[in-house]
Image 1 (spheres, rainbow, N blue to C red):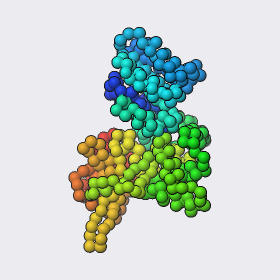
Image 2: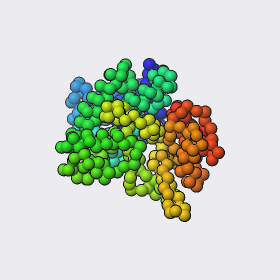
Image 3: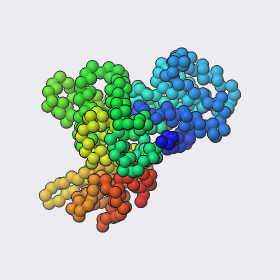
Image 4: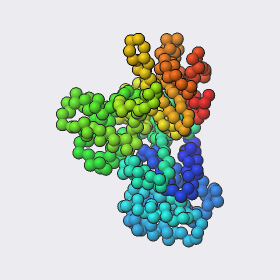
Length: 413
């Protein structure tokens, strides 16, 4: 098995180097943030000629560094290491363990020869709070679980075998590195219960873990389906829950989003050029976590594939919405769904996801919503089948899921 390189994120750190901002590395727990900082980025600095005594690295979760959880101890430790006017690189892992860490980072920010990089691993740090606190004074590096391309490069197995494993166990590096299925399942289950949910419950002082569990299960069962908090609330009521308010449901979903366990894709009216307030689609940041939550039941490949495409688009840096296009005719109005509307700067792509397009009827069905859009942005259908890339008679690109995932320029083909 090859070394995990995370080249995309390393390049983002390199681009942000010495930009006079705090580099904040965010992402779901166990996605590889600490590993990105050290050894990957630290080794890069050394290879680029930076002396090791100008790299100040602290793992704040180690017992030997316990005293540096005090903000003044941490500040003094770093400043005592600074002996000249050359640039020093400060790499702080698990910064959320430091009391009032925001004040410490603000103090470092004012030092002209400190370039600061921080990670954290509990929901206090992983939430949007840290980005809000340092808005305009930070660069966020969003780290995701392994993409399918990274997964297959590390595992060194054929594409079909890799796909079967990836859709079942996801891309969290510690899971990928486990040797057998039993280990993978046990690790995922333990991670979900004792790490993610524990953090969310403690941070937000949640009293009703049973309700949080129920919401997680509902969301895990409905990836790729339009929903909203009211629908989830009604589902909860229908299962016998009577003592929880809609506002509680809304809050619990936000807690899951803030911890990066799930992501919400908003609905976008393509012709009206506006977002629709509801419903949404929710996707899991890692499918292994979603699957273990459902005890590896409900393996609907079309919805799982849609979740993988959504995550891949985010990894590539796109903003992603769920599209809807309105068509008016003599019978009134018809609304067609578009799986994804993704944007980056002036580029836009419309994407449909489907298991196959092997009949004229299926081709028409999957192309219909795209053909109703009426603009010149590129339109793509991604299929599960292994196929040769082609364009249908409407000029829509048809591409197989593996080629889409393995070729970073696949949207430009």
